[in-house]
Image 1 (cartoon, rainbow, N blue to C red):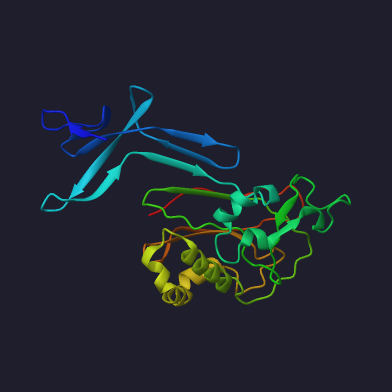
Image 2: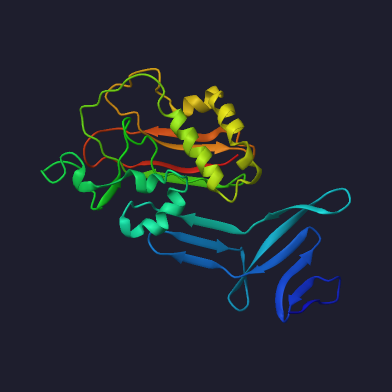
Length: 276
């Protein structure tokens, strides 16, 4: 392998005979191979912002330098788009459990039940519009946290999440917070199991204590703890943001509550929430 530079201020950098990047005063134009794959459940697209020969793409990388002109940070215009769906089906287990059940409890496997066991299913009621074979079953007496994922994001990244749900009336709610502790347990297990959390792995006890004492975090993870909540289950699609020290960030964090019983309810969705 040879790396060589063309003359004229070393603007053009090659590896063997393939152009790698073009230097300019504020950074470089990096040559990349675009990626586009989607199997209907999982997808990934990586792209630049300019066309180059031989089906290549180019993207601008800007260098942030210190007073000695050392590069301290690279800001790129390369775009990444990813999508993953948790179907709960057993034939997708090997794909879904590492993503949505990465904690030691493996919430995908632990909460999976056959849809035929859902009350009313197969007798003219139940979740007739769901053509799946398996679903995630949650409840205050079983598992309180279902499939979840821990993602590392950057400022400006947009997160969209959606889930379908079904429950039957009547519902009896009590008071008291029985969600925050379960969410904290799952978060700690996800931190320990993620290669992207680095030094946080040795501080999970402090992280848990800190978050448990944060009123805003507790309020977001159990927003209806102090009231019976009427005839709606205390069930939510929850998106939480943290900084690099796993301190809670309220901006963009949300908890969407289920809205109605029976079949045909619109999915809970938050679209385009942007990390600060």
